[in-house]
Amino acid sequence: MKELHCKRILVTGGAGFLGSHLCEHLLNQGHDVLCVDNFYTGSKLNICHLLTRPNFELLRHDVTFPLYVEVDEIYNLACPASPVHYQHDPVQTTKTSVHGAINMLGLAKRVKARILQASTSEVYGDPEMHPQVEGYWGHVNPIGPRSCYDEGKRCAETLFMDYRRQHGMAVKIARIFNTYGPRMHPNDGRVVSNFIMQALANEPITIYGDGMQTRSFCFVDDLIDGLARLMQTPDDFCGPVNLGNPVEFTMLQLAQEVIRLTGSSSRIEHRPIPCDDPVRRKPDIALSRSYLAWEPKVPLEQGLQRTIAYFKDLRLAMGRDQQASAVPGFAHH
Ligand code: NAD
Ligand code: UDP
Ligand code: UDP
Image (cartoon, rainbow, N blue to C red; front, side):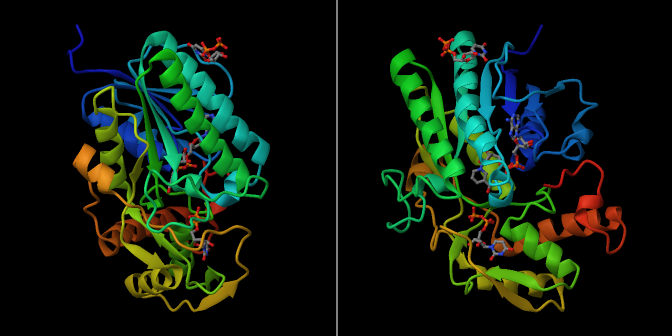
């Protein structure tokens, strides 16, 4: 007989960066984990160490198609998160966010499961309010190259709130701010992985624009703790709630910190700023502090050191000076 506290938990996007850490965390808590992924940006390498664990199950499936399984909780993370990847096939990105949310909400409704949506700070767009509080409605371009992701995630939030109002479901919405750490895709195109891979290869660090735009970086362990806490809140709390580190850095500062910590001889090279790139981003986390008793613990320097160690090992596995795309299991778009 199963332990009472042991739940059957579905993690969509479970072979991705955040999803793989979440699967591991939930297994360590003693739960049964069903990881669903179509390997669009995720990798079997992220979860191969979990495959031998008896409580772990892997299913290759695209969430834009219906899924019939029996579970108690659903974490809906399926969606490419890097601008390079989500803009590669923007129609599929919107389908994943919107059809994926409908299917997972339909599933949650049928089996009466709690469901948590991995939303994003991108719902605030290029924000006119700083720092961003959950009550802010955002400043989003509905027709630009980032819109497939931003508007897809906004529509998913709408669906979550409507399923809650219409069907009385227990839903949770996490607005995740930039998160980094081991198992980021080396060719992912996001700033932390780019800078570290470039620094380790002593290649130029590519700063888009003047480097004065800001982001606030949360280490993956802190973020996973926040997601798990949000899922455990009472049914009457749905969020949305910001999850992120409120310590703000310019991209120039980040580049300098990565160069310092890697001891790299890389120089800085400026490239054009991408369309609609947000100028400033920093979460107000008063809500997560009060409702979840959560705040990030890992400072940037410590988190970067752990991430740098991961990418160093990865480069060794790849063979000296080889491209990340040569690593088996890493799709490259
Ligand atoms: P990731 O790209 O590493 O992971 C996404 C996973 O979803 C991948 O394994 C991918 O293969 C899978 N996937 C994509 N489309 C799918 C589909 N149609 N069906 C099934 N699986 C699919 O990205 P991540 O950083 O781990 O992000 C996970 C979630 O968190 C995403 O929903 C993302 O929008 C959200 N998020 C992440 C961040 C961040 O900084 N990492 C910030 C805000 C929001
Ligand atoms: N769905 C699913 N798994 C389930 C139940 C539903 O994938 O276990 C999908 C189903 O394909 C449907 C969607 O979820 O299109 C929304 O379901 P809902 O019951 O809300 O709406 P309806 O079935 O009326 O369209
Ligand atoms: N960026 C950069 N160089 C890179 C990759 C990104 O300067 O090689 C910048 C990008 O323009 C943005 C910030 O870093 O201002 C964060 O980019 P990322 O793609 O990681 O995430 P975003 O927050 O934009 O979704």
